[in-house]
Image 1 (cartoon, rainbow, N blue to C red):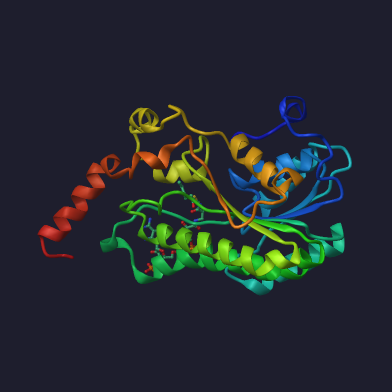
Image 2: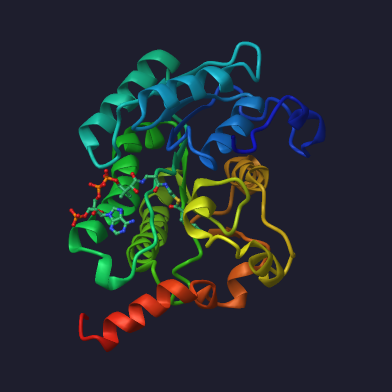
Length: 291
Ligand code: HXC
C-alpha cells in the first residue's frame, strides 16, 4: 500500500484548512500512488474530486476511501476510462460536472512506463507510452478546457526528470515527458489571457510509488539513495504539498513552470551505472549484429 494521507495532515500541514472549499478537482490516474495523495491533500483542504482510471474496482474503492477523509467530501471514482480515448474522458468530465457541479483543478497524471532498450522497444511500444503520457495529457486538457476557461481553473501535468539527461532504457518515456513539458508551457501561454494557469510537477525518486517499483533495479536502493543530494527518497506527501502550493493563491502569478520535486537528484546526471546487466544486454546485441 503506498503512503497515503490521513486527517493529521491538517494539523501538520502549513496549509490552511478550507483553502479549496467549493473547488472540484479532476484527476487522471487519481487512484495511483502519486496522484492519489495529491487528491487526498486537495480533499482534506476542502475540494471535492473526481478520479479517473482504467481499473474500475481500484478507482471506485480509492474514491470511497478518499471521501472518508473529510466529512461532507464528495469523491467520484470513474473507472473504465483510458486517457487514450478522448470521448471517454469527455464523458467523465460531463459526469463530474453533472454530479459535482464544476471542474476547477485538473491533474493530468495517468502514465505508463517500463524499462526497455531500443532493441526490445517496438514502435508500437514507443507509441503506447507516448499515447498514454503525452496524447493522454493533451486529451485531458482538451476534455476539461471549457470548464477550465469558465472557472478560471488550473491544470498541473505530472511529468518527470528522466528526459533532462540522456537516460538509457527510457527513450519512450523521456520523449513523452519532454512533450508533456512543452505542452504545459504552450498551454500556459495560450490560456494565460483567459486566467487559466498551466504548470508541471516533475517528481524524482519518490518512495512507495509504482514508478520506483518499475524503474529502480533490485539491490540498487542504497546506491540510489547515496546519489541523491538530500540522501533520501521523496514522499508522496511532498508531491502533494507542491501540488497544493501550485493550485493555491500563493502561486497565482506562476504559470508555464516546471516544479521539480526530487531532492536535487537530476543534477547528479543519469542512472546509467544503475543498469549494468541491461546495458550489457544492449552492448552484446550491438556486438552480435542484432542491432
Ligand atoms: C518492452 C513492452 C513492455 C516491456 C509492454 N511492451 N511492456 N515492450 N518491454 N516491458 C509493449 C508491448 O509488447 C506492445 O508492443 C506495446 O508495448 C503495448 O503493450 P500493451 O500491453 O498492449 O499496452 P497496454 O495494455 O496499453 O499497457 C500499457 C503499458 C503498461 C504502458 C505497456 O505497462 C501499463 O498499462 N502501464 C500502466 C501503469 C504504469 O506503467 N505505471 C507506471 C507509471 S510510472 P507490441 O509491439 O508487442 O505490440 C511513471 C513514472 C516515470 O510513469 C518517472 C519515474 C521517475
